[in-house]
Length: 374
Image (cartoon, rainbow, N blue to C red; front, side, top):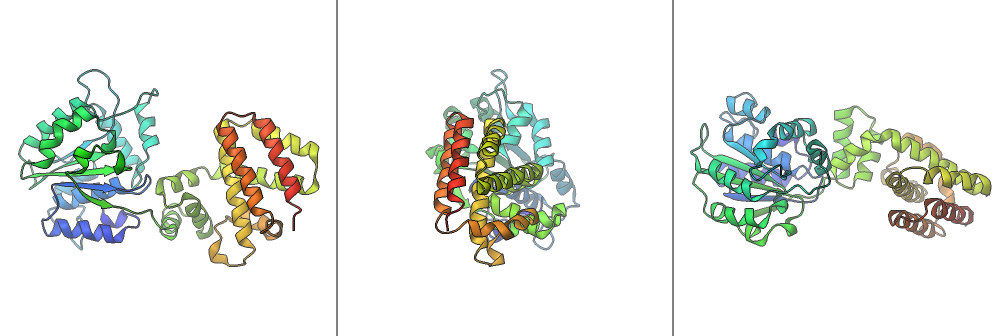
């Protein structure tokens, strides 16, 4: 993993690079920020750079034995700790290393907790970092570094650490061996036990700018720039969400078609077809219905902004924009807030297990009433 692979947060990347170059990396560092920011990728890049024997241009060389070991997630002085499922009293992270390597190799720069749950084949129990893992960590970190100056423990989601586990690690984190470095990676530092949090130096990573995510999607996946920017905009700085959105492109195409049908039938005030539309949407799974309503709300906002005729403010696919050239004037300052309020209300009521057919038909009726407001 290279520093250049980290999207956004250039100042943070430069800061940690300088800490390593000057041999001033804290013994316990916390990288924290919202989910979907490539924090785990940064931790991996830091460990590889720290261990690289031929750094070049501020990056690990990628060729030395240490870099090759990092590429396969098998470096002898790099250890990982992460939330896992208890199998028995002796269960530790090492029991899940095959799945963990798959997770790192398949996800690249992203760190999607739901993907990790899928690999764990989660049965609705809550993964955690358990007390037995603290003993494993203490044993690993007490040994002398094998091939490097420093041993590194990367702990993903320390907020999932149980209190009894944290208590056993306090002294080691506060007064580690000279060759120990702890890099903690958190999606929510406020949930970390205060006794652990107080013993770390913290660096916050910010959400990735839309333009950066769009450029990454376009260059990596070969999609056109307009589509990439539309996907990036909907992700709101969350790289994992952007990739999910890209993968769900077929679903977005379906949602757009259903959005167009709603607006056309509402304009025509065709109650019979609106009723059929509401039943079709209700026949979706509840979560899919919610995603459609969220998508529709975004389309309403995009169409309202489209009326300003400032291209840089819109993030729509070509398919969406083609419809908006004629539809956008119907979304204006006199109806946009009410429309959004009704879509948001419908989404909340479906989330609350309300009757989908009734909720959606009521929504369709409101759209038919409001779409003619000028």
